[in-house]
Amino acid sequence: MLIYFDVHFCLCLYSKEKQKRPMKTLVIIPSRLSATRLPGKPLFKVNGLSIISHVFKKAEEANIGEVIVAAEDQEIVDDVKKNGGQAIITNSYHKTGTDRIYEALVKFDNSKIDLVMNLQGDEPLMNVDDIKQLNNQMIKNNSDIGTLASVILDKSLYENKNVVKVTTKESLTNINFPEAIGFSRKILDRGKKIYHHLGIYCYQKEILKEFVSYKQSFDEQRYKLEQLRALENNIKINVALAKTSPIGVDTKEDFLAIKKIMEYKSK
Image (cartoon, rainbow, N blue to C red; front, side, top):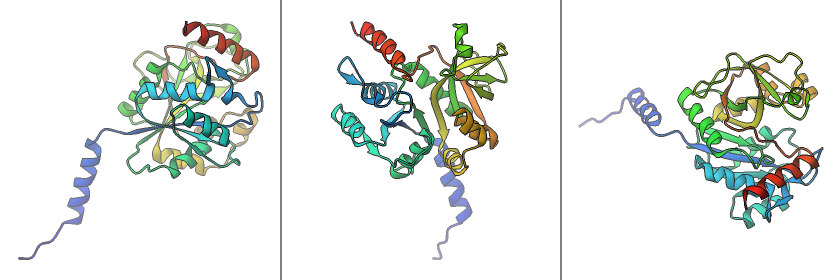
Protein backbone atom coordinates (compact mmCIF):
# COMPACT_ATOMS: atom_id res chain seq x y z
CA MET A 1 0.00 0.00 0.00
CA LEU A 2 1.40 3.40 -0.99
CA ILE A 3 1.12 5.97 1.81
CA TYR A 4 1.80 9.65 1.17
CA PHE A 5 1.16 12.95 2.92
CA ASP A 6 -0.18 16.15 1.41
CA VAL A 7 2.32 18.66 2.81
CA HIS A 8 0.03 21.65 2.23
CA PHE A 9 -2.80 19.87 4.03
CA CYS A 10 -0.55 19.07 7.01
CA LEU A 11 0.68 22.66 7.27
CA CYS A 12 -2.90 23.93 7.26
CA LEU A 13 -3.79 21.56 10.08
CA TYR A 14 -0.77 22.75 12.09
CA SER A 15 -1.71 26.40 11.52
CA LYS A 16 -5.30 25.81 12.64
CA GLU A 17 -4.13 23.91 15.71
CA LYS A 18 -1.81 26.78 16.64
CA GLN A 19 -4.67 29.24 16.30
CA LYS A 20 -6.83 27.13 18.65
CA ARG A 21 -4.34 27.07 21.52
CA PRO A 22 -4.47 29.94 24.05
CA MET A 23 -1.97 32.72 23.38
CA LYS A 24 0.98 32.57 25.76
CA THR A 25 2.57 35.66 27.32
CA LEU A 26 6.06 36.06 28.76
CA VAL A 27 6.61 39.02 31.13
CA ILE A 28 10.14 40.46 31.04
CA ILE A 29 11.27 43.23 33.41
CA PRO A 30 14.41 45.11 32.28
CA SER A 31 16.58 46.46 35.10
CA ARG A 32 19.99 48.06 35.63
CA LEU A 33 21.77 49.88 38.43
CA SER A 34 23.29 52.63 36.30
CA ALA A 35 20.18 54.76 35.79
CA THR A 36 21.15 58.32 34.84
CA ARG A 37 18.83 60.18 37.20
CA LEU A 38 18.83 57.82 40.19
CA PRO A 39 21.64 55.22 40.14
CA GLY A 40 21.03 52.05 42.15
CA LYS A 41 17.26 52.49 42.37
CA PRO A 42 16.30 48.84 41.59
CA LEU A 43 17.78 47.79 44.93
CA PHE A 44 16.27 50.61 47.01
CA LYS A 45 14.15 48.94 49.65
CA VAL A 46 10.56 49.46 50.78
CA ASN A 47 9.18 47.32 53.58
CA GLY A 48 12.36 45.24 53.50
CA LEU A 49 12.05 44.35 49.80
CA SER A 50 13.84 45.89 46.82
CA ILE A 51 11.95 47.90 44.20
CA ILE A 52 12.78 45.33 41.50
CA SER A 53 11.50 42.43 43.61
CA HIS A 54 8.30 44.36 44.36
CA VAL A 55 7.76 44.73 40.59
CA PHE A 56 8.49 41.03 40.01
CA LYS A 57 5.93 40.00 42.61
CA LYS A 58 3.36 42.39 41.11
CA ALA A 59 3.88 40.78 37.70
CA GLU A 60 3.50 37.31 39.19
CA GLU A 61 0.28 38.38 40.91
CA ALA A 62 -1.18 39.34 37.52
CA ASN A 63 -0.82 35.66 36.56
CA ILE A 64 -0.70 36.23 32.79
CA GLY A 65 2.45 34.20 32.17
CA GLU A 66 5.96 33.39 33.31
CA VAL A 67 8.00 36.32 34.66
CA ILE A 68 11.75 36.97 34.38
CA VAL A 69 13.98 39.95 35.15
CA ALA A 70 16.51 40.92 32.46
CA ALA A 71 19.31 42.54 34.44
CA GLU A 72 22.56 44.24 33.56
CA ASP A 73 24.00 43.65 37.03
CA GLN A 74 24.67 40.48 39.02
CA GLU A 75 23.50 42.24 42.20
CA ILE A 76 20.01 42.54 40.72
CA VAL A 77 19.96 38.89 39.65
CA ASP A 78 21.03 37.81 43.15
CA ASP A 79 18.39 39.98 44.81
CA VAL A 80 15.54 38.72 42.61
CA LYS A 81 16.54 35.08 43.06
CA LYS A 82 16.92 35.55 46.82
CA ASN A 83 13.31 36.75 46.89
CA GLY A 84 11.99 33.80 44.90
CA GLY A 85 12.08 35.23 41.38
CA GLN A 86 13.73 34.41 38.05
CA ALA A 87 16.44 36.64 36.58
CA ILE A 88 19.13 36.45 33.91
CA ILE A 89 22.15 38.57 33.04
CA THR A 90 22.01 40.59 29.82
CA ASN A 91 24.67 42.69 28.10
CA SER A 92 25.59 46.18 29.25
CA TYR A 93 25.62 47.81 25.81
CA HIS A 94 21.82 48.06 25.37
CA LYS A 95 20.55 51.58 24.77
CA THR A 96 16.92 50.85 25.71
CA GLY A 97 14.90 48.49 27.87
CA THR A 98 13.24 46.99 24.80
CA ASP A 99 16.57 45.98 23.31
CA ARG A 100 17.40 44.36 26.66
CA ILE A 101 14.18 42.35 26.84
CA TYR A 102 14.73 41.05 23.32
CA GLU A 103 18.10 39.61 24.35
CA ALA A 104 16.36 37.95 27.30
CA LEU A 105 13.67 36.58 24.99
CA VAL A 106 16.29 35.04 22.68
CA LYS A 107 17.98 33.37 25.66
CA PHE A 108 14.62 32.02 26.87
CA ASP A 109 12.84 28.98 25.39
CA ASN A 110 10.34 31.14 23.48
CA SER A 111 9.08 28.65 20.88
CA LYS A 112 5.57 28.74 22.36
CA ILE A 113 5.56 32.42 23.32
CA ASP A 114 3.16 34.70 21.41
CA LEU A 115 3.22 37.94 23.41
CA VAL A 116 6.04 39.65 25.31
CA MET A 117 5.10 42.03 28.12
CA ASN A 118 7.70 44.68 28.96
CA LEU A 119 7.04 45.86 32.52
CA GLN A 120 9.29 48.66 33.76
CA GLY A 121 11.41 47.72 36.77
CA ASP A 122 10.87 51.07 38.49
CA GLU A 123 7.04 51.02 38.70
CA PRO A 124 6.13 48.98 41.81
CA LEU A 125 2.69 50.61 42.05
CA MET A 126 1.45 49.29 38.69
CA ASN A 127 -2.12 48.01 39.09
CA VAL A 128 -2.49 44.23 38.62
CA ASP A 129 -5.88 44.64 36.93
CA ASP A 130 -4.36 47.08 34.44
CA ILE A 131 -1.65 44.55 33.55
CA LYS A 132 -4.38 41.96 32.92
CA GLN A 133 -6.41 44.46 30.90
CA LEU A 134 -3.51 45.17 28.54
CA ASN A 135 -2.84 41.47 28.04
CA ASN A 136 -6.52 40.80 27.32
CA GLN A 137 -6.73 43.65 24.80
CA MET A 138 -3.67 42.36 22.97
CA ILE A 139 -5.17 38.88 22.71
CA LYS A 140 -8.57 40.21 21.64
CA ASN A 141 -7.30 42.69 19.02
CA ASN A 142 -4.11 40.98 17.82
CA SER A 143 -2.35 44.37 17.87
CA ASP A 144 1.32 44.95 17.03
CA ILE A 145 2.14 46.71 20.30
CA GLY A 146 -0.10 47.67 23.19
CA THR A 147 0.43 50.01 26.12
CA LEU A 148 -1.49 51.73 28.93
CA ALA A 149 -2.44 55.33 29.69
CA SER A 150 -4.49 57.05 32.36
CA VAL A 151 -6.52 60.24 32.60
CA ILE A 152 -4.51 63.31 33.62
CA LEU A 153 -6.11 64.83 36.72
CA ASP A 154 -3.20 67.00 37.86
CA LYS A 155 -2.75 69.70 35.20
CA SER A 156 0.86 70.31 36.26
CA LEU A 157 1.76 66.93 34.71
CA TYR A 158 1.36 68.39 31.22
CA GLU A 159 4.59 70.34 31.66
CA ASN A 160 6.41 67.73 33.77
CA LYS A 161 9.08 66.24 31.49
CA ASN A 162 9.38 63.15 33.70
CA VAL A 163 5.77 62.25 32.85
CA VAL A 164 5.33 60.97 29.29
CA LYS A 165 2.10 61.88 27.53
CA VAL A 166 0.37 59.99 24.70
CA THR A 167 -2.13 61.34 22.18
CA THR A 168 -4.69 58.88 20.78
CA LYS A 169 -6.93 58.85 17.72
CA GLU A 170 -10.03 58.38 19.88
CA SER A 171 -10.84 59.21 23.47
CA LEU A 172 -10.05 56.27 25.74
CA THR A 173 -12.87 54.26 27.31
CA ASN A 174 -12.93 51.16 29.48
CA ILE A 175 -13.43 48.93 26.44
CA ASN A 176 -11.70 50.44 23.40
CA PHE A 177 -8.07 50.13 22.26
CA PRO A 178 -7.36 53.06 19.91
CA GLU A 179 -4.10 53.84 18.13
CA ALA A 180 -1.51 56.22 19.53
CA ILE A 181 -0.59 59.06 17.18
CA GLY A 182 2.17 60.65 19.25
CA PHE A 183 4.19 60.67 22.47
CA SER A 184 5.73 63.67 24.20
CA ARG A 185 7.36 64.76 27.44
CA LYS A 186 5.89 68.26 27.38
CA ILE A 187 2.44 69.19 26.09
CA LEU A 188 1.32 72.74 25.37
CA ASP A 189 -1.98 71.96 23.63
CA ARG A 190 -4.06 70.25 26.33
CA GLY A 191 -6.55 68.39 24.18
CA LYS A 192 -9.10 65.81 25.31
CA LYS A 193 -7.23 62.89 23.78
CA ILE A 194 -3.98 63.37 25.71
CA TYR A 195 -3.21 60.92 28.53
CA HIS A 196 -0.51 59.97 31.01
CA HIS A 197 1.48 57.18 29.39
CA LEU A 198 2.45 54.33 31.72
CA GLY A 199 5.69 52.34 31.55
CA ILE A 200 4.41 49.07 30.17
CA TYR A 201 4.28 47.54 26.68
CA CYS A 202 3.05 44.29 25.19
CA TYR A 203 4.50 43.11 21.86
CA GLN A 204 3.64 40.43 19.39
CA LYS A 205 6.83 38.35 19.48
CA GLU A 206 7.61 38.88 15.79
CA ILE A 207 6.92 42.62 16.07
CA LEU A 208 9.42 42.86 18.94
CA LYS A 209 12.01 41.20 16.70
CA GLU A 210 11.22 43.70 13.95
CA PHE A 211 11.34 46.66 16.36
CA VAL A 212 14.86 45.94 17.63
CA SER A 213 16.14 45.52 14.05
CA TYR A 214 15.64 49.26 13.47
CA LYS A 215 18.27 51.81 14.49
CA GLN A 216 17.41 54.44 17.06
CA SER A 217 15.76 57.38 15.33
CA PHE A 218 16.73 61.02 15.80
CA ASP A 219 13.56 61.84 17.75
CA GLU A 220 13.91 58.73 19.90
CA GLN A 221 17.38 59.83 20.99
CA ARG A 222 16.42 63.49 21.32
CA TYR A 223 13.38 62.92 23.52
CA LYS A 224 14.48 59.61 25.10
CA LEU A 225 11.24 57.93 24.02
CA GLU A 226 11.87 54.55 22.40
CA GLN A 227 8.22 54.18 21.37
CA LEU A 228 8.89 56.81 18.69
CA ARG A 229 11.06 54.22 16.92
CA ALA A 230 7.97 52.10 16.42
CA LEU A 231 5.76 54.90 15.10
CA GLU A 232 8.47 56.16 12.74
CA ASN A 233 8.73 52.66 11.25
CA ASN A 234 4.96 52.28 10.79
CA ILE A 235 4.48 49.89 13.70
CA LYS A 236 1.14 50.64 15.33
CA ILE A 237 0.79 51.11 19.08
CA ASN A 238 -2.66 50.71 20.63
CA VAL A 239 -3.57 52.17 24.00
CA ALA A 240 -5.80 50.79 26.77
CA LEU A 241 -7.22 52.92 29.59
CA ALA A 242 -5.64 52.21 32.98
CA LYS A 243 -7.61 52.45 36.21
CA THR A 244 -4.74 54.02 38.10
CA SER A 245 -1.92 56.46 37.37
CA PRO A 246 1.15 55.18 39.22
CA ILE A 247 4.38 57.14 39.29
CA GLY A 248 7.73 55.56 38.49
CA VAL A 249 10.93 55.93 40.49
CA ASP A 250 12.80 58.52 38.42
CA THR A 251 14.06 60.79 41.20
CA LYS A 252 14.80 60.62 44.92
CA GLU A 253 11.56 62.52 45.52
CA ASP A 254 9.64 59.88 43.53
CA PHE A 255 11.17 57.11 45.63
CA LEU A 256 10.28 58.81 48.92
CA ALA A 257 6.70 59.38 47.71
CA ILE A 258 6.31 55.76 46.57
CA LYS A 259 7.90 54.48 49.78
CA LYS A 260 5.38 56.46 51.82
CA ILE A 261 2.45 55.10 49.79
CA MET A 262 3.62 51.50 49.96
CA GLU A 263 4.36 51.64 53.67
CA TYR A 264 0.91 53.09 54.32
CA LYS A 265 -0.79 50.37 52.25
CA SER A 266 1.09 47.63 54.14
CA LYS A 267 -0.26 48.71 57.52
